[in-house]
Length: 495
Image (cartoon, rainbow, N blue to C red; front, side):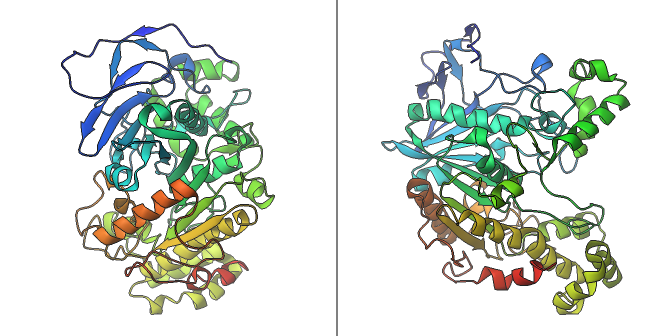
C-alpha cells in the first residue's frame, strides 16, 4: 500500500472567516454555509495526475497542515468541449460535497457526469435541491477524460482505464470521509448520466469496485449500449462505449508515432508533452478498455454472465433521447435530414434489414425525417439496451425501471421539438449550468423525482415495484407505460 506523502502546509484561513470546518483524512477544509445546506468545493481525492503521474493510477493526496479553503470550485478536467477551443486543467481530481444541515447520518449519493467520456464537469451540477429535499449528502466528481483518461500503450499499467480508476479512488475517499460531512459511509449510491451511467454499469461489473458502493442509478446509459454505422450521427461509425485493451494500445502506439515518440521511450516522451498537444487525439480515446485488471471482461459480457455486483439498481431512459443529437445535427449544424438521407441512413445502418426498419419507422409517419431518425435511434440505441440491462440485473438483485416522458422541460431553444431528450431529466434533480434558456422545471415533477431518488438512496426502493415494472415519470407523474412495447424492443431483439 502506498504511504501518504509528506505533509503540505497550506495558507491558514483567517480565524474571522465564516464557514464550516471539517476534518478529512488528509486535513481540515473550510466550506460555505447556505440556507439548509453546506458546500465544500474542490476537495482533492487524489494527487494531481500531471508529469510523472500522467497515465498512472490515482495517487494519494499529500496531507496538509492548517485549513484548506474549499469555498470555490476547481477548473474542469482538460477537455475538448462540444464547441470551442480546448479548456480545463490536467490537475483536476477534485470533488464537491453538498450536505444538509439536518442531523445525520445521511445516505450518500455520488454523481458521475456525462459527456461521452471526453467532456463535462462536476461543477456543472448544483445538487442543493437534491441534498436538501432528499436529505442526502451529494458528491459530484471530476475524473480524467479523453486521451488523458483512456489512453493506452503496450506495457503501460492501467491502459484505457485511468478515468474509471479515478472514479474508484473517489469512492474510496467517500468511504473514508463521508462521516465527517454527516454522511453514512455504509450507505453509498453511485449515480451517473449518459457516459456517467455507462461508468456506473462498468463499475457494477468491475471486481476492483466491489464493496465501494451499495446501490446504483443509471440515467440514460447502460452496459449494452451500441449503435450501427451512421445511426448515432451520420458521420459516426458503428460502436459501443467500451473497447479492448489491444485496440486502445494499438491506437496509442499510432498516436505516439505521430508525435515523434519512439516505442521504447513512448510513455516518457508523451509525459513531456503539453496536455493541449494531446487533446487533439481525444476522439481516439473515449472508450474505457476491457481485458484489464479493472474490467477483465467487457461490461456487456460480464453482465450477461451474471458477474455484476448484486446491489439494488434504478435505471431508465428518456422518451425522446435521441432528439438531443438530431437537434444538434439539424438545428445547430444546419444539416436537416431529407427523406432520401433517411433511406440512405437505414441502408448504411441495417443493410438487408433496412426495409424492415423503414416499415416500422416510416418517414411519412413523423413530422420530419429527422424525427423518424430520432424515434428509431432512441429505441435502438437507448431504450431497448437499457431495458435489456435491467432484465439481466433483475435476475440477481432488486432492479427498478423508469422513463422520463415530460416533453415540456426546459430546453436550449424553442426552435426544435426537443421533447424529453437526452439529459432533459437532469434539471429536475440538479440546477445544471448553462443548460436551459426556454421553459420551466415543473415543481411537482421535480419533487417527485427527488423523492424517488432519495428513497432509493435511503432504502434501495424508489417507491414502486421492482421488475417487471413499466412505471414511468410522465407529464401527469403517474402514467404506467409498457416500455418494451412503446419502444418496439421485441422487433429490435431480432435485428
